[in-house]
Image 1 (spheres, rainbow, N blue to C red):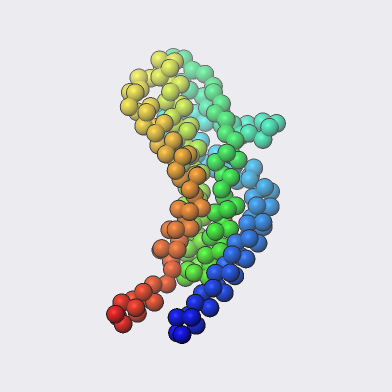
Image 2 (cartoon, rainbow, N blue to C red):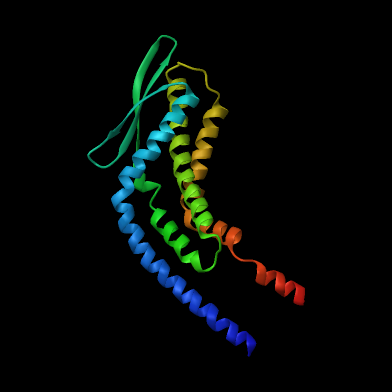
Length: 202
């Protein structure tokens, strides 16, 4: 009897959480469409500066194409020769899960505590995934171009490592982003007092 009473509030909470998810997904999808280009430019700007520092090349500018793609232009110079190259990104290919992730975060509001801290960490993880996707792609491409043009000696292992890290981010973190961030927030910020009480009673 007591278990049935406990189930009813949880069922209501679950249904309300699903409603929050549905409404949030529509709202975040509309918002994301509006800000995606601006967000992409910001991430590309920061990641390109970091990649240029790591690879010791010059980051020149961001170029926007008619098809919506964004490109980072670098100038590579070694051993008395140099050239410019543009690394293009279609941000919709690796940020497509962002609205879903934000909706999952909103739906968890009924099951977690410290909402401001939880959402701040969730957003930081989301941005970090996108940043490292761009950064590893650029750094790997620059290393390959320097080696291909015999401007710098690069080990096969080094090139493989860049490709492996980028592949892992693309195949695992980007694809499972909503699940990973949602699981982290639930495990990290869900109240655990009821678990402790059950253990004490047992």
